[in-house]
Image (tube, rainbow, N blue to C red; front, side, top):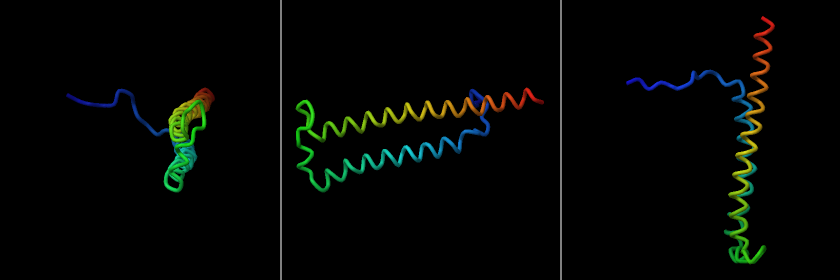
Length: 98
């Protein structure tokens, strides 16, 4: 039985954009996460401080990390879809001119 891709794969013209965007978003998240690690390393008792609705800093920061990752994923998807649509329109226009 042959196992081939379901769709033809070719060069992704938006690939370099996606890579740069992904690296920038990863760097931003890494800095945010490094703050969490730094607080735990340098002042672990700070994480026990109640900051919101009876929740301590560790819980709030942890939830913020999860939410930030989800928001970044949505933003990445939206921006990449827009860039792919832009390239598709440009390709369609160039085909119409031929």
